[in-house]
Image (tube, rainbow, N blue to C red; front, side, top):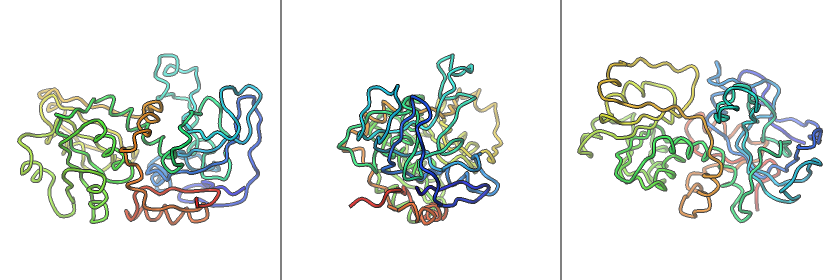
Length: 341
């Protein structure tokens, strides 16, 4: 079968490799229907990498597929059923796993990052990582359940409401997912930062109330011109740059700052006293709420299809990677077994 293999720093190669085989009674083989290129995939291919990826693994952690083969102990699923995949495989034994914090498992595997993932015609997953999904939902939406699960989990931490004034940094694929989710949570006052005309257009198309092109205007000026006060909630969906120090100045007392974007090379300098004096809360987010995301995609008004800009075969995956790297794409969906008709 064909698969995209992470060879090492900056190198992703599409090549023929052996088909996966059932080796454990809980193993499942799926035919990959669709896989989405994530911003972390771009970070992992950077030099130096913004996130660690294990050399030699099949890349891609946002994917869905149809079951073709199951181990003897797999129950509750059927051959021919489409499933969503949670790529984080918990160890079950560490402090985090034994204290109801499994999403932070310190010994986890992660499909597409530390273990074989979904940029391949077929993938082997553990049955415990699979979720039933409405079979009528298009595959390019189901492939986005994983990033949506991350977004929903993070928003559950900061409980956005219709009366909140919200600033969202970032209009890439995860930022646009945040826009759609925030609207589903009832947020009415939302300013989104973007860079370049394409990103601004996509953010507006997804429902952002105000979009700030950071190459042309200042977020603080736009906020003061349109809002009576500062922000109640600020979300960093970028993970690098000068966002945290700026957010500290733009947040209301007792406001919440959600750190979602992840780049291990990023550094910020802040004044801790301001967080004390104004009782500002900071939340880090790494978890995944799959049940919440699977329920949310049943809502036809969620609109995750609004920002799919590229549909690609596996052979053309580098086209999508380069387009995302150059901010010429938002959501890129890869179809390892061929484009849908």
